[in-house]
Image 1: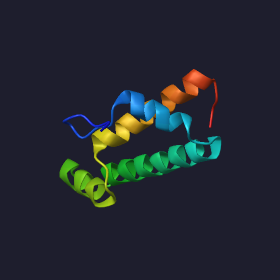
Image 2: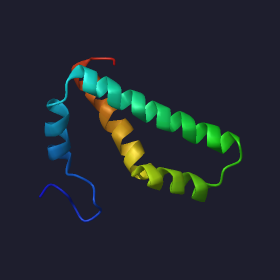
Image 3: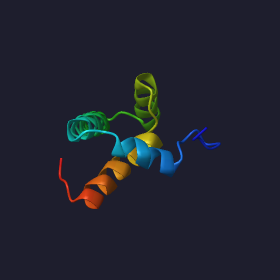
Amino acid sequence: MGQNLSGMTSPDLIQQQLNELSADEIAMAKQSLAEIRAVIEELLAAGASEEEIMQILADIGITLEQLEFAERILAQADQATGMMV
């Protein structure tokens, strides 16, 4: 099961999956998130509306909430391991 009503995966399942990732996979995930965040910042600077940003994120299959959650999880993983990727 692993998912709650909001569609988010349970923290225990996320932690288990995170533990199974290699350092390279975590680094790639962080790089992808940073690239998405940079695009969002560029679009905002160019005057894009929140609705346009949300649509772009939807087009790539992620919500802003999921993006922020993933960033927090990866930051917590760095703190837990003392690893900076």
